Length: 339
Ligand code: SF4
Picture 1 (cartoon, rainbow, N blue to C red):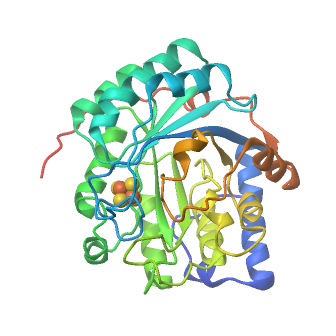
Picture 2: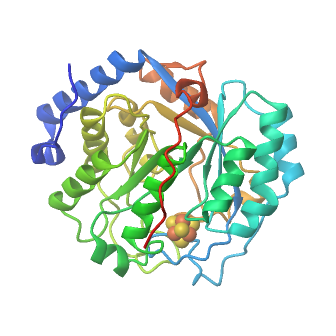
């Protein structure tokens, strides 16, 4: 079975037997590339300060009601060195767009983890300066997660997504050219988003120099301008995940925790049957986790037990190879960050 060069519009609206066949093809392609293996990483959410104002996120800077935090290096280092779940091979360090936290907490934490543990290190920190990207890379991080969120530049601006779409894409290309492994992602089911918009998202994802891509079903966030909009349909997100797999058999595609929040009981597990090959265990200390307000305060926390259950229920097994080992180092091709 081979990857497709372009997405097919019918994939996005598939349901019933057609959808089963689509997801089955995506699962088969995943198996042919990765076997039954699913990567398992942990995530720590280091800061909920954010200078951006995305309409779909509760951590936007206009949400003045939110108690803001920055976690301490020692607290997270202790947790990840001595108390991490045995199934983890990688850790993702995530913040709102908060360069202060990156300099003061994330860079030292990456250094500590690379020195004290065998974990591969991913970061998801927003649009930063080239100097900060280099500092993170020198500290030992190798995967940068930076979502383009949606491919319609006018709508991107309307939703106050970070910077401009053009700038976001420029940073994705810059990171890839500077030797980072880059994973991006988009939201499926935003208000007024139709099949053509999702098709454009898939085309854009396919063109970018990525090693992975996620699809997050839209979840109306507490204290956001989209708080009263309907939840994105889980089927649209799952069909997009399957489509990504059909387009890129070699990509790492996460099952995102938001698949648990669409009202469908089995969204997360279905993700693992529709092309996903990465699960994330949330390790953020419980005393600060509630304020990491991506969607709602009552978060559905993917702990190790839930992740392992989902993997085994989907007939898959935990990878012993980390993401960092899976991807060999990339040659550098330093571009100019123009515009
Ligand atoms: S999505 Fe990210 S950049 Fe946008 S407001 Fe939320 S934390 Fe900030």
